[in-house]
Length: 558
Image (cartoon, rainbow, N blue to C red; front, side):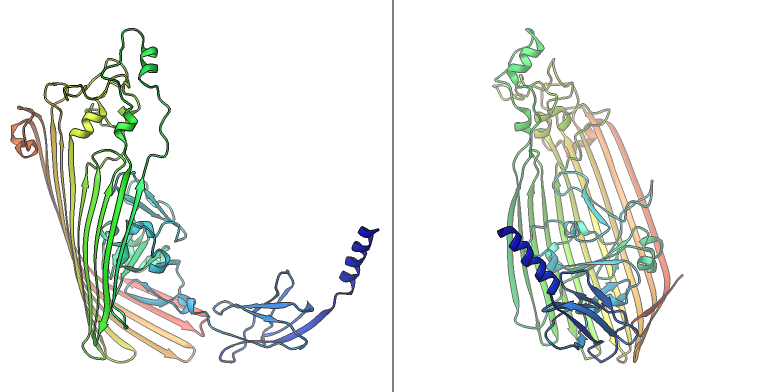
């Protein structure tokens, strides 16, 4: 009887629930009517849209809440009382008024016609990010960020809406503070104010074929008004191999191999010997502020990262100075200077070795005889074994490897901006990017073996890029209509030089500083290359916004 009473009471409540007929007008904060605005009863699927005059009529339950929304305005919730008429004045959504950096200028987010996503410093602040590329991972739709290897300082692959070429380069174009052809790997992530990703043809059209894989626009931080700010950030993290392969131990291997095999010097777990717990230390120091007409942002960064493979590590040192001076109310000058040094020690990509190289690697770790310790009691190495992998002992090889890739980068740009009027501005951007990569690798083999002689490899690549951009912008509001015309004349030149050698079959073994005695090698191969290019371009862009509803863009490049 109790259950019957409860269900009967519930049924009566549903039958006699009261409803209210609500009507009203939806407009913006200036009083303009908003046709097509959505009016929804919260928590239900009961909803309507306003007519051409911004008028709505809806029947809702007593005590309901109306949810009113319209593109470009903040969603509002209104509690329904006893009044039959509810008029709502919508407030603009500031996120759509956000100004984004695009090619050679800026645009309001609400005016964009191309596909652009934005990541600001607030999206990744106070997070342990070592590489600038990591800030894009899982924060920008259509952008895939993946590491080519687990090595410290290893290359990071970025693909915007997939790969566009089977044989060509699929990396996006990087533009840092207006300078084309930047390198994200050299950047200190704490220096980044925002990263805007231009993903489709219309968004990247102004860069021509260079933007075919997408464009990443990076804006670094500037000094702001207020009290001077000094920030010191430090974080430490660790990396480990999450799980070892379940391999035979020394006793099990001897039992499997038979009576002819034996445990030598206690055997070894080669996975334990080859891998280690890798620590990462990241120290960042910044100072920013504005004094009178001078605004400044200064930063320093130190990254010290161990690899999960023994005898591997990565270090980066970086300094930045961003200065802006308002010489007059119309004339502004800015100077950005950035330098970094990256040092990758024994960078290892993958575990396989070349056909002509029998030195061990990750591949050898998984197949080497665990009954044979990598080192004898007298300190000499056991380089080979009659059982297991035919490659050289991976522990000995890794301990004797000495490879250093050092990248030195120096970027500078000078920005001059003069406003002839509120509508006409002329900007000159002059910048240079200089980088040098030096690779020195020495693969040593301990004394007492003729299995494979030591070898050394040297390579050096230096590049210089200079850019001069002249940008004239006319921007005018005519009530509900906005017109913006941009003209650009740009010069860009680049020079790349490379040289290197490979030396093998050293006449003498066990030499100190053998890398610098390559002339003692019987086999020597030398190579060199030189490449230069220049680009002279004219670009025009026109943008028209009619009543904030119809937007027209036009590009011409020569």
